[in-house]
Image (cartoon, rainbow, N blue to C red; front, side, top):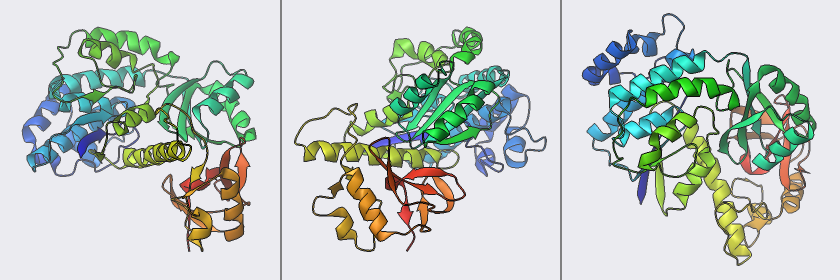
Length: 388
């Protein structure tokens, strides 16, 4: 089985991250302190100035903790990877782990990147849940919101939009009216959008001064969803600032390489959950293609039938049936027969327990979903489990 290490990006930071790694890898920690001009250990463990959540500090902090986590993995006998990938900022760690960048050069780039991105003001971002890329683009088109970009394709049902703060605020009712979950994100800039072009131009000047080496292991690029080409490393790394993070495409590419195991290094398990969702959707498409006895490439969208692996029924056979595949309408019908309004559920995409407020229904003509009380939004039936 092939091995892929993945590294998280901004948003995963938490006070106390890094733990004993700074003491275990004192030489690298000293190098980081010299480059940054402050104690990275003090920032990550104690955050005395409440700076950890500020972009110019967040990015170097995550880079260092991710890098030390990889060092720890290899030191403790962990296998070298077959592939590496990182989400946004985490991509620098993937390149560093692959030998493309030295620890020092990677940190210098990340430091400058964080400073430039922190200067971007007036922007906003929002996560859209349970809507596809195509559906989101159609909503934006119908609402004449052409100033908003798709910033992150995190999973088939978790996509982030980016733009001017006013435009993001104006977009919310359009998504709400389309029964999509709209979650504003706490960011000051319109990251991974056209509004980062100025920062990108400045960053390019710094990137051109760095010497890159050929990777020891393939690294998947955010901007293409495919392995970096050596002669395009500087170009792709620079354009990542203003372009969409194609995380779903990246993981799909890796899944197409055969039996593969993913391990998240660094802080938290955000990527682990996203990969789980991407793989679930990937498996559904493969199963649907086999059911129809046709060969479907990974990029082809197969919306139905739906595999109900996540559904925990009182009578599982009546839900799954003989083939393990049912249509969205059948899934909705079976859910409503098994679970009344007010059923308690849990989801990998939400930390606390949820409660259904309506019966299950079909959204957008194909998606089986149910509305959640208090959360005030819909969840796909494939993404929830009833609590017995």
